[in-house]
Image (cartoon, rainbow, N blue to C red):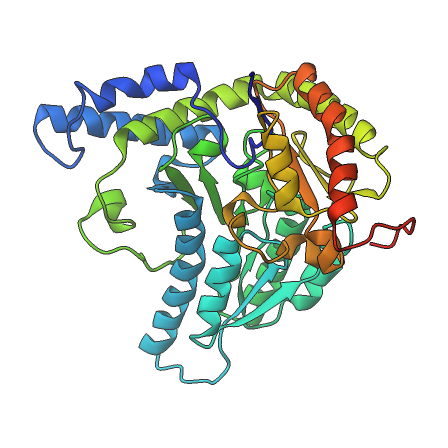
Length: 411
């Protein structure tokens, strides 16, 4: 039976051209880039060329790119690095004020941001979690109101991995820049940085760091057809942060650990291909996504989660009244249809999605979610099969559900 993969937001297969580019660094070009002899320097050259390529694709300088193991590490490094550096600076200045540094984020961030913020709260940092409303969008006025004289970091994801909503990152960047200028005029020395998790966005949306106005930006390769185990963090020149991984002097003493040379080469190639194919692929995926949404919403008691227009071209997330998400996935799996319920990173949890709860959905409805994410190998025939079998599965599950489906449209 043919497989029908609808979980590209979770991970993607390695592109053939990408694998071809990285394969030599798993075999004959296996040198350690920290070694001074020629085999090591061959690997070092590959890493630096990849750094230059990625930097050029987001309008950054090569030295502003730090290679990591994944987006989770990148997000941790961005938040903890800035927060603990600020704490260290305060201690060295003997600033013993009880007013702790302030961080702003949203309620629908990836857990690698939310749990890092909770971790920092244990050390006395104050965190504001902005609401997003039923459409999953951060309001600009909420960002502006939340910023205080003690705010040192704002972290808002570019596009959500579960419901696909796209935030107004460039507009938020302008707000932060204006406030930063006013601070400087008043002599407030507290830094104000802007971080965005661009993991889902980078292959589909404009990602010029200067036009977005971001100071830190996280990505990971396996979301755009590169291998797992490699990511990157953009850190603008002048941003002060404390490295979170100690060891050797790799990444100019900013992130210790032997570089994943093959992964880095592959990620640079994959990002290059994504940029070349972006315009055509975005148009194709939007058409498939809209076709999917139109058909699925014909099932009674079904909701599209997130904003209808301000969303990524490849993600559609639905909630079904009277259906349990895990059971839905198992039924779809019988047809070799692979999708997800809520965030793939927390699919082993029985708790409803924090993203869907932030939209205002009730627990029992949030439990009945289905995320369908499309990709490079998705064709209309895949969607047609999903549309064909989904209504019957939903009806079957509703019959055995303890939560009785009714005619109400209450969310």
